[in-house]
Structure formats: structure tokens, C-alpha cells
Image (cartoon, rainbow, N blue to C red):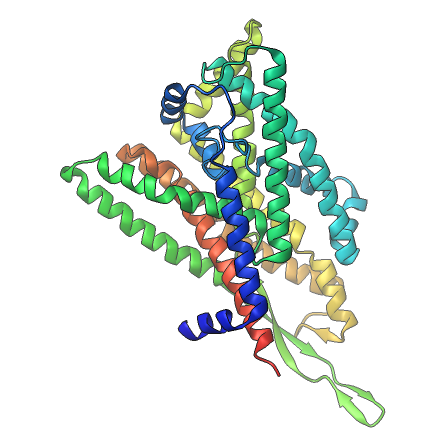
Length: 421
């Protein structure tokens, strides 16, 4: 470990990437502390203490929503735009070809469409969120122009944050959006732990110890599942070119148990929070029908068991969905056939694609169950123990561990490249 750290410090390129990463994260945390004007601080604190929904939004904004920062939307609009674009690939084959089959240039164009979609989504989400907070008495706007100016500010803050995430992905290490969420979660850990331990007396110490043990076991399980794979043996046929023989080697194709990583958690939370935000927006409507429907949605998700069941189901489904989007058995089978490779006992072509699809479906079932269980475990613990800070602990823990593993793999890859002469 220490040797690798020294290699990172000695390597100019890696050292520069780490400095870029620290610089971008420092800029993110600095701007996140700049609030928009017109805030009632006392009502703001009381509102977040009583509302689990906005507590989750605050988690993914990196704490920026908690003080109504100019970056209060976080990367939410960009995540929503990415979800919409991924869903559109299931409807429009041309978008699927653009994202998967047209190489790096196609992926860049696809990502550009996601970024363009983020702009109107940032304005819509900013207007909706500010309207909700205004109706709660947290914000006070004297004129419509003041409100419109704040909508522009928070939308611009979200777009700026998206740009910072892109810069991290390009010039630093790891996935930029995931690292921004990671930075926000880590920054909130000390205060969450302090609130947890200060709010409960010695009689509840066994509960806190049990939670700590469960957290350690969860971390170990996340690492185990994230690193687990199903090796599929691959044989390369012998080929003779001129006077030399090529191929004849044996390797394996690693199929990850959880190929989707942390993305299903983010997708599920975004979809789960959307109806609650819309319902909160229309809760004070003068229309009786809208008011009744909004109250029903809010009360429906207020039940921790209903919320946990919906959360588990969405995580489970999004794990399969994202795996289907990112792993194409037909494309893998075609590439193996073109390179002269085959699976033992399986005919090349459609038979290979069907075999790989069957394996991925089975192992993804295990990964989806695990992700869903880890996601809802803190909600169940919160319902049983009454410790409010446990409500976001499992999701935060899963994201932190997954992002750390992903970034560590990138660092390992960079070090491996530099170990060759």
C-alpha cells in the first residue's frame, strides 16, 4: 500500500490528476456554501429535520440543499437527463446504436444530448423546488422577478456542477458525477455521526453497537459482491499465417455479479423522489382534485414499509435495466466470433449470445437482490430503532464503497500501465 502511494507521488501524471481532483472538489465544496438570498434559517432547519424526502435530496446535493446553496439542485437534473436518455435507447434503435455501436464518437454525442437535456430540466426542477420552499415559508420573494432570478441562479449552479463533473472525468481520476456525490456524503458523515451519538443515551448503546457491526458487515458484503464475477472460459482457435502459428490460447470472460454498480441506487432514488416532489408542489393548490391526489401520494410514501418496498422494487428493476443497457450479449458474441474465439461446447453466433444472456440473467438476480436489500436495510432499522440518521446510511454507505472501489481500480490501472518498460 505504501509503495503504491509512493509511486503515485513520484509519477508526475498521476500526481497532477490527484491535484486536479482535490482542486475540483474544493471548488465544489466552496461554492456549495454560498446561499441564495431570502432564507429563513430557523424554518429551514426545522423543515429538514421533519422531512425525510428533502433529507435524501440534501444527501445527493452534497449538503448544498441544506443551506439553500446556489448548487442546491446538485447533479439531480443531470442524473434525470441521463435516465431519460437511457430509457429512450429502449424506444429508439438509432440512440442505442449511437450509445453502443458507434465507438467513442457516438458515446460523446450521446453524452452531449444528455447534457443538453439537463439545461431545461434544471430550470424546471429549480422552479418547482423554490416554489415548494416558498409555500413552506422558508423563502420569501417580494416580486416574481426575484424568484425568476433565483431560478436562473440555481439552474446555473446545477449546470456548473455538471461541468465540474465532466472536468473531473476528463482530467482527474474516477467518474466525476459519482465523486461529487461521494464528496457530499463524506462531508456530511461527521455531523451525522455526532448527531446520532449525542441524541441517544447509554441505555441505547447496544443499538448503536449493533448498527456499527451491521455497517461493517455491509461494507464487507459490498466489496465482496462488487468484486465477484463469473469467469466464462474462452478458447482461441489456432491460425497459421505464413510460417507462423497464432492463437491456441485459453482465457476467460469475467461477468460481474453486479455490473450496474451504484447506478441503480441513483436511478431508483431519482424516480422515487419525483412523485413526492410533484405532490409537494401541488399540495397547496386551490384545485380540490389536485389537493386530494397530492395528499394521497404524500401519505402513501409516508409509510416506511411502502417506501421501502417501492425502493427495493425500483433498485431491483433498474439493476436489470442498466445491465441490459451496458452489456449486449449479441455484440460480445459477434466480437468473439470475429477474433476467432469460442466458448467450449457452445456454437459461435446466436448460441453463444443466448448462453451469455442466460448467465448474466442469473448472476444479475443475485446482484439485484443484494443491492435492494442493502438499500432498504437502513429504512427497516430506522423503523425498528427510531434512529433517523440511519434512513440514508445504507444508500450513502453503498455509494461511498462503490465509488472508492471504482476509483481504486482506475488508480491500479494507471499504475499497471506505468510498470511496463
